[in-house]
Length: 309
Image (cartoon, rainbow, N blue to C red; front, side, top):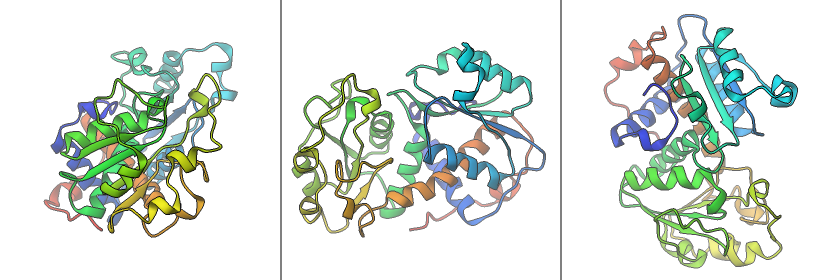
C-alpha cells in the first residue's frame, strides 16, 4: 500500500490489520527513530481530521509542516501538484491531503515520490474516517459481519457514506441507507429504508450532517429532525444494544436531538478518540511500505492483540 487513498484498495485482511495496529498504538508508545516530516495539506476546513492527524503525528514523533490555503500561494494560482511537489522538495516524508475535488489524487498519481494519504476527497472518499468508524463498531460488538448498519442523512453529498458503505459491505455487514427526498444517491447500490424502520432494526445508526457547502441551494432544515432525524422518541425504539455514530461536525437539533449527542448509546466522541490511533497506524503503514526508516520491531513481535471494548 504505497498510498492510502481509498477503502476499495484494501482487502479484509488489510482492514483488520489496521484496526489491530491502531489498538496496539492505543496501549503502547512508539516513536520514529529519525527525524521525519509530515505535511498536512488541507484545502478545505477541518477540525477533527486535521487535529487528530496532528496529535497522531506528535505521538509518533513526526515533525509537522502545517499549511493554510488561505495564506498560501494557492491564492496566487498555484496548483495542487505544485503545492505537493513543493512540500516534497523541501523535505516532507508524507503528505496528508484534503481537497474539494472528487479526484484530486489523479493530479498527483505517479508524480510524487513520497507517500500520500487521503484525508477527504470531495464527495467521493474519506477512508481514514471510515477506518476509525470500523474500529468503533468492532470495539462495540467484537465483529462486523452480520451487523445491520444504517447510514442516515445527506447521502448524496457524503464522502463518509461512500467509504463506509463499501467497507462495511466488504466486511460482511448488512448496509442500509436512509435519506430525505433529494438526498439519495442512486449510484450507490444499497437498499433505502425509512428512519423509523432503521431505528427499530439496525445495530448501528450512523448519522450524517446536511452538507450545505456542497448544495447548490441551501437545504430546508426546519422540519428535518421531526421527519428524518434521530429524535428522542426514535432513540427509545432502538434495539437494546444499538449505538449511535456521527462523523461530525454535528448540526444539533437537525439530524440529531442535542440531548442524544452524549447519551449512553452515543459513540460520537469515542470515534474521535479512535481517529488518532487509526491515523497513527495508517501513517506507519505507508512509511513502512516506502521503507522510510523507523523501528517497528516491537509491534511485529506481538502476534495477537485483543481489540478493547
